Length: 328
Image (cartoon, rainbow, N blue to C red; front, top):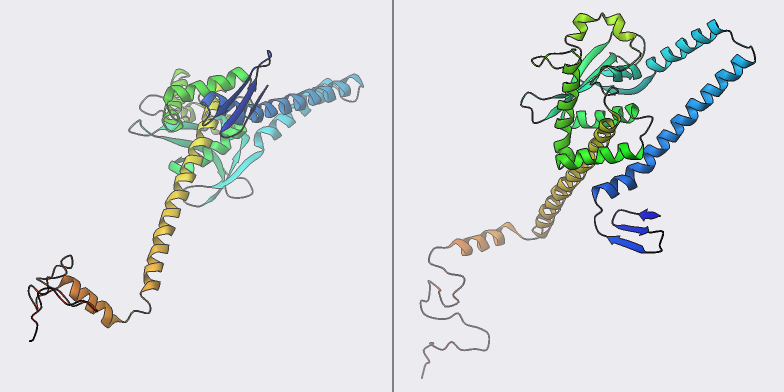
């Protein structure tokens, strides 16, 4: 049995020994706590939906309510509806509304940048909010790619994952050292899968460049399975790792942004306080203080250093200077 929160974990062995962890968890434990239940629920839900659908079809067939031909037509129609279903509405880099269908996961992919140290996201989509339109492609980078990849990978991982797949995903991120370092590696792995499939060359690695020359646009629309290297065509463990990494990296950037915003607010508050402190001080007083502070030959640290009376300490109330001349 194991119970865990952000900074405290409790594990109880069968023999009765209880172990308590205080502090930051290991990545394996963190992933099991955060993603294990989430991916497990997705997997159970997918299995229930699949089982219910199979039972319904079997009941219709056994009851004679549908013929073999009707069953085949109904299956094809449901598959087409599933592929054409809109899973996300967003905007392209120019701000134009776009729609992303589930079948676009079959051809969209991660791409390395020109220097090989970063990554981007190549996404097929339909332009506009409603209606038809021809398939188009956009490439996004940076924060936009991070947020969009997280949303699309959640759709690609709709069936969840097994425990060993989740552990494998965590090991991939651990080997990279950090989610930020893992994502460029994932983009390169995706492109390797594309090159092995013969759909692209090294000089033109983006999924679809050569493919669009070999396969007509209408054939792309009829794809029933994801192409190798696409978001939905990657190995389950790699897909899960990409989703984990995008979520963690997005949260890290959001936290850093909040800290920078907080720092800016602090500086603004200090400036406002300084202005407020000086609101009731006349300009003549400020000028006098500044002149006294910067007057040549005056050392504010030495009380007896007065250019008007050299060597004489300034008078203090009730105290006679030691070097003052007395009148007899």
